[in-house]
Image (cartoon, rainbow, N blue to C red; front, side, top):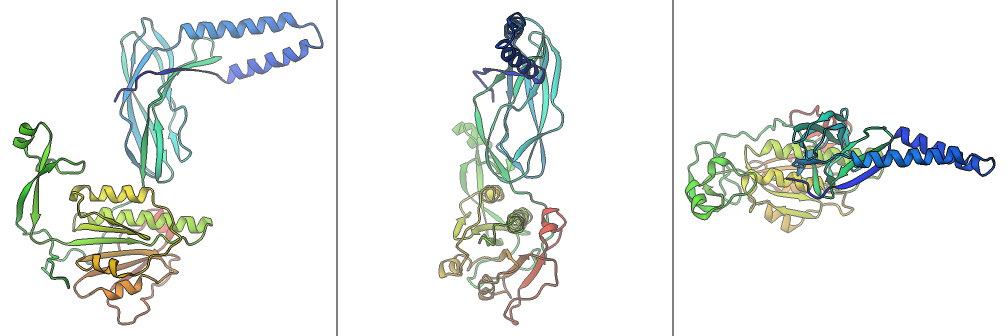
Length: 398
């Protein structure tokens, strides 16, 4: 993507602000004593610095692609290409971001170009780091120069801005009870076996969607329709999964915020680790039920991370209702993520047939001995993890 129609931005440097401050003091002193000669000299000096800097302002073309998403807590390197469009040499160029969202910061030193000849191009690498998930607006970096007096910086800013989606931090986990080799049947009679040994059935073509495997692209149909399409298959036997995230607001304290962020991050990690074993059909966040059955299999985890990037605490706690039970009737693997001080979802877990369905409740709280649900006959799986363990990526097995 090319950023077009840049605008000139002029700003004083640290030395320039010092000279401006000195000019203001001389102006105030000239009201008491005759110091108009010194004041006029300083004003002429500022005018000369602005005029020469404007004549030698950088004329460059900045090209590059802004990312559509990054991961919270992970440093992301972005590459841009700076091409000189001037007829003279450009000196002391600096490429950096002028303004970033509060939760996003630039890491590493500024990238400086000592000299750029006419028509010459150079690739610069800038790094950014997002401290928190969410949706933000990110613009192009600015290329400015302080040559020759280092009093004012003349830079080119680009009005184009794009939405930056910051996914929650996630990690690959080892999920127990998911790699079953036998073919079982759920209470609804749906096949819940793994894809191993299954024979896929071709059902047609559909437009290519981000996340689809390149191996499924139909080259002949692409050439005929002039747009990429993929072959779609139906598996006779497969596992179906669902994720439930209890987003009921616990408290507005720092501990409550950490608990909520840890729950969101853990949900993203479970989805990332579950994708290779089964199809995630539903994501429940509070009172919202997100149906993923129509999303391509390769794009479901990305869709889940997009939802989790902007999820916020819901004052209405999740309740067990007939509609939710009906949706989860044919699910083979269910993961419930909730706070350790609540047990409202145990009733839903007890309702499911844990002999034929893999049901796991993950509680976040102090790292103590995990106790089972209120019902002693509940045969499901319950584990407790600490908030610090999730945020520090110390949890590797569930």
